[in-house]
Length: 509
Image (cartoon, rainbow, N blue to C red; front, side, top):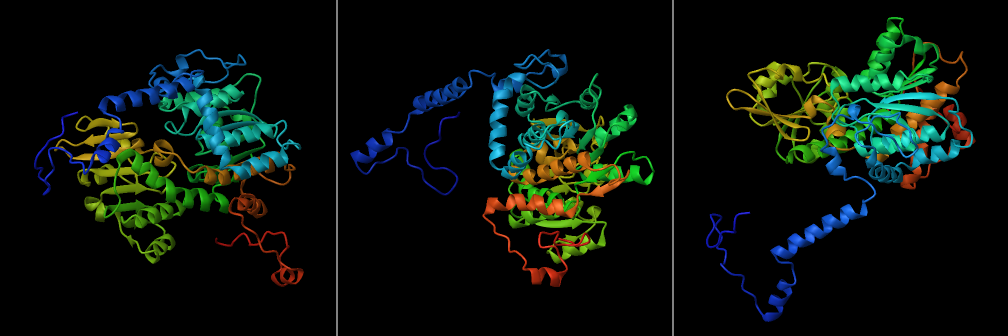
């Protein structure tokens, strides 16, 4: 550090060369604070005590700096199993603590685990999963195991895996293949290792984005002879399922939990309302007040993002293809424009559509210096990142998941997570919201696994509304919320069962 300047500074204030104390008592009080040397030794002692308390496990930061590919490592857990591939199995203790923290705010999922643990509704289920591997997902996976399932798991995003959580799952006996910062080749290798296991064949699929389902169709179509159903939780993955169904190629029933009310409203709207700010702050330290922002897409994700940004003083406009969503944006106080009309003025561009080439190279070329570009949709195709990997542009890594893309004239665009999902690549999402999503997924798996053959055909289904309501009811105790009960007379008047469901399927929440 440079020594502090004394005398007059160029801020309109005169700083004294020496601190003046009113009396000896003030001087003694001041001297109680550590000196420079004291502060350094204090920070050393804090750091040392932190590592001492974790002496049974490798240092979490040190291990993440290890550049050796997990595929090249030979690792075993404490039970002697090597049927996993994670960054460092020695991080398991850290991961277990992360999972315990998540469990505290996922009481509904834990409640479901306790209620159904005796019945084992997933006994005999062999679930292969491809989702984000976070502490919250680990609570879901361990719930499925407690309900009788065997699980093999991989990541749906190359940046969202929490390495220590993956290690904790591997230590507990779950066959998990994932680490943060996988290459594209690693990504598909991990999916293949999950599916292609001698002596083990999946009979249920839990997917987020459709990549696992796509891989099974492409490489191991015979697996579908034993699969009882697919549970899919993303816009992108659901879109793929409907395409398969329309083409007559969907050979097992599938449950679309993305469009269940509890998932769409809470995971998409309320979760993104909080996590968009978290991801942007962690990566860029940006201040939102007065910033010009365009949000591409005003579905539930876009609504959540716009609400949060507007609340902090950002000037937000929206792009939309759907006239109904566009009208909603207008009524909520946002201007609806085309991206090419405003791209030059924007400080931030956020994609929330699930589509492809929403932000093109032409848009990127016209952006102003310092514009932040990121994606809140599941798919990594919304921003045309491939068009930026050309010789005339320079990529400069600023920090983890933050790149400067520099044009020949010196203009810089700040690209986050290489166009992948911002909140799970660059920050975390609230455990409570993921409890809602995870409970929905667990119930969908139980429903498809236990349903009689005649109940579901080879098509895509929504989670039954009664289950949607049950998921919500499990979370109400968190708020000490007390539901009003219909009288017999009221139920008859409304034509409802006193225990629900309370809304028809066409109702828009």
